[in-house]
Structures are given as structure tokens and as C-alpha cells.
Length: 169
Image (cartoon, rainbow, N blue to C red; front, side, top):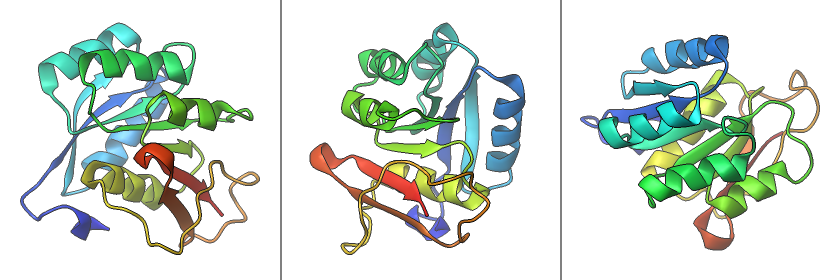
């Protein structure tokens, strides 16, 4: 997946999650990648807006519940940076939450229980705006608790409006 971005490009990420431990773990994972860098972190909506204005990230990795609900958080980002790719992730998404996030302008939606390489791969794809293979299917949420899936199976496709719909199988 690293080949999605040119060798000289470092993907600049604004990481927005209200849970300190989750932010730390995701930042540690991203910082291990030679082609990615967390340039700013946000624990709330105010810090997110500051990160967007001051740091100018290439992509936002956004906890859907940062501002109460995914559509609210996404609309905050869109007010400041209308075209910035937003990847939303969430623990235990309820039915309809992925649809709401994508309808509000997220480029991709993943549950938080994805494997590390899945999260990193989708981040790269969203930032590079690389379409998925034509034979992939557009599905939204993970199936089950996450332990039963094959590490190499992540599928997605660009749907209406160019959004990436993701499911880990």
C-alpha cells in the first residue's frame, strides 16, 4: 500500500479522538510509518478546528463521536476545509451511523476494531484518492467482533458522490 503515495510524499494527518489512550495508540502506529506523520491531535471540536487552521493536514482521521455525532463533526471540518479528505472511525457503530457519516461528507468509514494494516491502508487510499478495484463491493461496517476475519481481506468501492464505503470481512 505504501506505493499509493509518491516516495517523497509524507501524508500529514490530523488525528481527532476524544480518548487519550486511543489517540496515543493510533499516533504510535502512524509514527512507525515512513510515509505518514501525525501533525496535530485533537481531543475535542475546538482543538480539531485549530489543527485544521494551523497545521493544514492532508487528511483527518476523525472519531465519529468527537462532537457528539459523526455528521456534526464532519460538518465542522467541512466549514473550515471543504475538500479535505475525512476518514471516520468509530467503536461499536450503530445501524445507520456509517451511512450518516458518509452522507455528511466522510470519504471512508471504518470501525475502530480493524487491524492496523487495514487502518493504514484505507488512510493511504483516502488521502491519495485512489479508486478501489472495479470488482470490489461497497459495504459499510465490520461483521462480528473482528477476530474471525482474514487479515488480507478489506474491500471497498467508491459509491455515490465518490465516497469510499468500507467493510472488513
